Amino acid sequence: MRVEELSKLSVSQLKEQADIHFIAAETPIDADRDYELVCAQLYLTEIKNRYDERIAKRDFRLEIAVIVLIALELVAAVYEVIETRANASQASQQIAVLEKLNKSASDTAAALSALRIAQESALATQQHTLDNIITMNTALQDAMGLNYAVALEVSFNEGNSHMEYANKGKTNLYLWGSKFDKDPASLSNEGRLITPQGMIYADMTSFRKQAETTIAKDGITHQFPVELYLKSANQKSYVQKCYMLVHWDGDSLKIGMQTISVTAQHF
Image 1 (cartoon, helix red, strand yellow):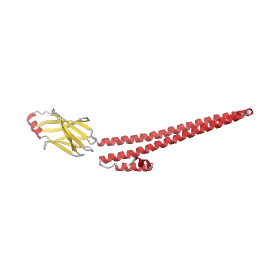
Image 2 (cartoon, one colour; image 1 turned 45 degrees about the horizontal axis):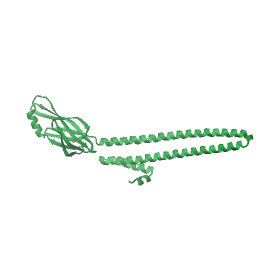
Image 3 (tube, helix red, strand yellow; image 1 turned 90 degrees about the horizontal axis):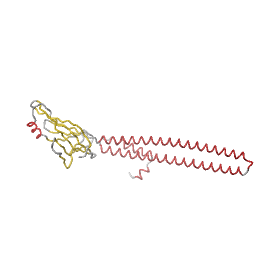
Image 4 (cartoon, one colour; image 1 turned 30 degrees about the vertical axis):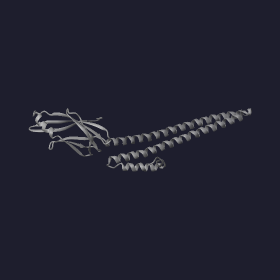
């Protein structure tokens, strides 16, 4: 929608369009949900801008009206004073005019006080509206942030010696590389896609065979640090740190995974 078309919509039409996008945001597709929420926020912002403009125009008209009234009262009072002074015998009328001028000044002060109270009330209403919009905007930002939260479950399948990476989040996740124990980090030119509730794996058969010949059957659990280099659907980089836990259970080699931390970090 163009800016000119948006400016021609009435407030009720803007509210109707915002409701339409809020309803459409209930879709399970993350990209569509974010788009609908941003569109709804656009219409809410336009409603707020029009409300602010209407309040500003009203206050300006009130101030102009009060200034005009004050000017008219002063002109009338000065005119009466001039006429009264022209005739010295009308001193009592001059006093009455001064009293009237004093009353007019008091009335004007009361009008200005009422205007100030009205402006403060309008400002409070405007602030309340702004707070509501900020709260809604924060909620929208939080909702979109949760959609991109990284939730990668790492496990070891002893049946086929596979390291399995399961995406438990709501949006796509990309595995760009890893670092095992003291080996250097290995990064690929393109991340491996892991869809929501999807899984990929890495073959660890060679590691298992090596561990069976090098790790003593002493009952001690050996820890091997593992780092995984990830990117979320909004292209934010993360490093997930894990431990591979290896020990002998009788004559059976047992391997498990333990996630230690997930931090937003460039790699």
